[in-house]
Structures are given as C-alpha cells and as structure tokens.
Image 1 (cartoon, rainbow, N blue to C red):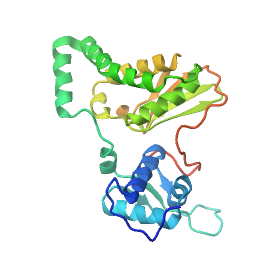
Image 2: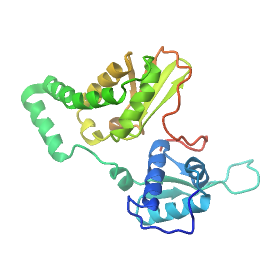
Image 3: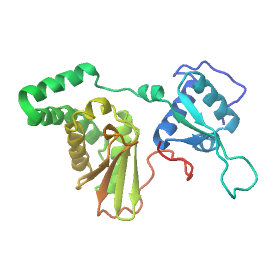
Length: 244
C-alpha cells in the first residue's frame, strides 16, 4: 500500500511520479475509469488515487465526467469517471513529427504509393527484430506468441495487451507512436500488421487503428484455439471502463 501521508515531488523518478505514470497508463489502456477501479488495479487506497487524480487534473492531464443517475438505480450516487486529456496522450510520445510527414509526402510525390510502402517496411524492420529478440523462448502457439509480443510492444511504447477469444486471439495497442503520420499514410499500419503476422506466425486481421480515429489498434488472430493465455497487463475489470 502507498503511504498516503507521504507527499513526494511529482517528477517521474519519484514514487508519486511513478504512480501517476501507472494511472496514466491504465487510463490510456481502458479509456475511462473511476477512482475505485484505479485503486483496485494499483493496490492503493481510493484516497491516494484521488490525490493523484487531483494533481494530474491540475496539470491538465486528466478530466472527469460527472455521473448521471440511472433510472431504477439503488441508493448511492454513481461514481465519477476519469480519462486522459489530449495533452496527456501527447506525453506518451510520437516518433514522427511534421518533418517526417513532409518527407513521406516527398517520397509519395516522386515514387508513388509503392515507394511509401517500401519505406514503411524498412522503417518497421528494426522494430520487428527487437520484438523477435524479446520474444525468444515464447511458446509456438500464435496466441501465446501474441501475449509475448504484447509485452515486447509495451516496452517499445505501444501500451499493448493480448487476450484469448473463443475463436482465436486479439492483440491491442492502446498507443501508436506514429499515429499522426499513419493517419495520412496507412502504409505504416499495413507494414506493422505484416510484422505482427510474422511474429505471431499466423494470419492476422487488422480490425481498427488509432490512425483511423479508433480508440485502439486491434489485431485479430482468427481460428487459433486460445486456451491458457495469460493477461499481459493489469486490466480494470468493470463494465464501466470503456474506450472513449
């Protein structure tokens, strides 16, 4: 449990800073959450979580939604939910800036879509090799490999999770470091999808992308029996937590 009476500086290297980073990661992954849900996921008290949320709100990093009473609800007021602001999402970093976008426009102008695709494939190649190395020793089952890949991608800043489905598996990336550029050049997403397929050793289908305006990049692994896959991150298990 966190010592609620101890107040540390809010820098990233302090206990408070580390806790707030975890709060931000959970909100990024789950979209919205209550203080109670965050406290359960972090193993600290709701009082401590609210202190962190208040500090993050003062810094413009989180915003809250006032609860709305539901018809037929029992006694007690619905809990306030929190989510990250756009400014907070930006703190997770974007590897490409306006100069990268301009460079890709130049490539497209002079070489066409095929040249952009070739560039995208070359750019994701180092990521593929790093993830392959990180996945060394993972089980050969596609869904088990997706779980290992989620951990590798999270280390690269993608905040990735994997889970088993009745008819396959699913890999989700809750942050995209190249979303700003990929919105204009989907070849980056296509190259990344091909990498995911090669690393899990199975055909995959991209169902949603952050670059396309979805809340999360979702990759489906069809037809793979998925018994026994372990969760790759601390999820908040509640129907109230949804993507924004």
